[in-house]
Amino acid sequence: MVLVRSVIAAVLALCSAGSLASAQAPAWPTRPVKIVVPFSAAGTADLLTRIVADKLSTALGQSFVVENRPGAGGVIGQESVTRAAPDGYTLVISSLGSDVITPAFTPLPFDPFKDFTHIAYLGGQPTVMFVHKDLPQKTLAEFVTYAKAHPGEFTYATISFGSQTQLVNEMLQRDAGIKMTYVPYRGANLIVNDVLGRHLTSGSLALSAAAGQLKAGTLRGLGIGTEELGYPDLVSSTWFGLSGPANLPPQIVARLNAEVVKSLHAGDVQARFEDEAIDIKSLSADEFTAFFKQEVVRWTPIAKAVAEQAKAAGMGPPQ
Image (cartoon, rainbow, N blue to C red; front, side):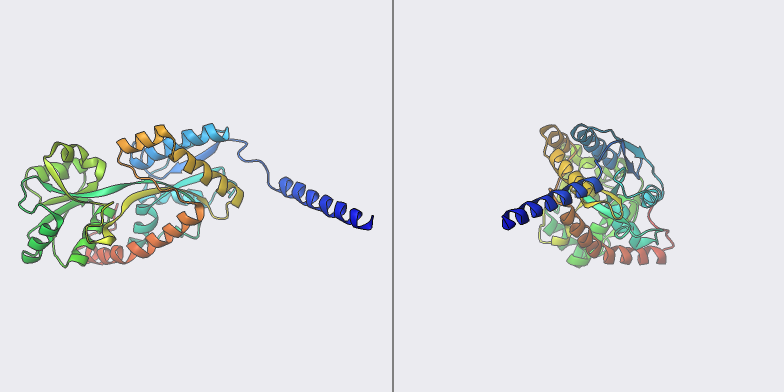
């Protein structure tokens, strides 16, 4: 009888503890959730966010409202979220450019790793290095062989210095032992047109920006960010993720991550992402955080080297 009473008491204690834990973990979400996109509307980050936000709204029964807050390469929007309460009602889009590359060029008013909780990987566009269809060098290996014998003769262009696409080219030069002449541009269409006009040897852009000409055969891709081609450091994409203020409750992080991963595998989402040449990764919150750390280790040295080159040339930080 004493044993039975002890068992009952233990069970009641567990039930009470469970009830207390439930009471201490309020239901979420009970009101609209804001996702800050620290970039202008109509870009890849905005597209990704709005697609996922629609899925989250349906799955969680509350509106996920997208707010574009561009400025200073993402710094303005992100800094605003560092001051938000860690209650799951204010989230932000993180990215390779704003959270990994920009801090290597200029001091930020926050720590992109310590001042955020990194929740889920959303997707990324692979970069492509392309040339005119009639360039004699038909493969990346032939391109590298010629460039080694003719230092500085080949030119390459990206959208502004300090971009991920420029850093990929800098890695290629470092790893292959070649030297190309860099020409910064302000628009993808300008780069495509000047490669078509043979004013540039090569361009590097997000795959979607050159997809039409690549499919038409007027441009030829030498390397895409999803292919190693003998240079493992060049396997990369311009990725975006979902993050929030530091110290978000683990149960909110886990729920958000699960719903984001589920939304990325919905048939309509995958079809849309395929049209935009967006790759996805099914990463847990811990895996996304580890991936984030790896990206910092990978890109910071080459970004700092480019920053030093830019400083010597009298150029400012990337915009």
